[in-house]
Amino acid sequence: MAKKPAGRAKRSVAASSSKAKTSVKGSGKAKSSKRIAYKQEYIKLLQKTNKTLTKEVKAIRKAIEQPRYSADYEAFPKEPTKSIAIPVKSPRTPQTGTVEDHILNILQDIEIQIRQRDMIFEELVSGSSKLGGFDA
Amino acid sequence: MPKHNAPKINWTNINARITGIVEKITEQNFCIDVAHRILLELRRGLAWRNDLNLPVISSYWSRETMEHFKLNDYKPLLEREVFIDANYYSYLNLTETNKNNASSGETTYVVDLISDTTDTKRGDDLDTWMVINQDFQDNLKDLWMKDVLSYWIKEDKLVTRKKKVIKLEEYWNYEDYIYMIRVWDPELNIKIIFIVGTYDKYV
Image (cartoon, rainbow over all chains, first blue to last red; front, top):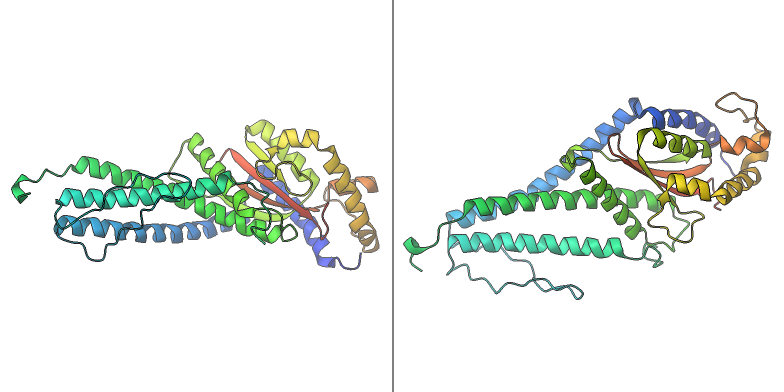
């Protein structure tokens, strides 16, 4: 079979023995380097999550310190998705509400957003794996 | 409402809600992150199959992974590590994995994306799959002999890693020929194996 690269078969033989060991013992130098790589990935993810949460916390703090605060904070669209009804709260009026109202409104916005993410993921998970062409 | 008449802030309630939000966001980010990594590997390995909805498969298994985390002891998700690797393995690797499962009580799912046409998302328990998939073994053997046997005879590469004298037609069992994507964790009681191809050609 001329098209098969010669190095490939050789590499695979060597890899097979190391893989077999890895699958049994689950340790080794290669794994520790992988661990480091994934830790770095997770640090990135943590930083990203932290950034998002910091933003939300800042908004809440501002709301506590400045009851009239409304700048820089925009509630995301609350239209329900076509398939699942989402509880929609009445339009909020931060200028007339109390500090607690304002904080609770922000929290409610975040929670609704989280629920929407959940539903989107749920729809994706429960979808057919053979719709075809989706990933092409 | 005059300021002095405003209801007191219930900090306990607010704190509990923020804790819930953080937990939920952590879970979601975990799922999205794992799904994305699985998707990248599946795209690489399954370029030859454009009839599959790979985002569905990857998100399904990322959520399954998280459910197993919860069943285990549900330590903070970001402190754990989920390994995803893609490489060529032999059929022997599959049987060894199966043997290890029996002793460790680990759950291993195999998602056969080569020959399984019934359900490519949920996969099968590895033990069950190996029992019912004699066809897969036979196909693999035939393909290996057709694809690479003559080439390896010519290149004098027929040396088993166990240095055993084996029948030529049994050599396929030892040779790394099946391309697999494995999702696993040293402490997690789940292992997912996606069988996505063989050298160059597919069953």
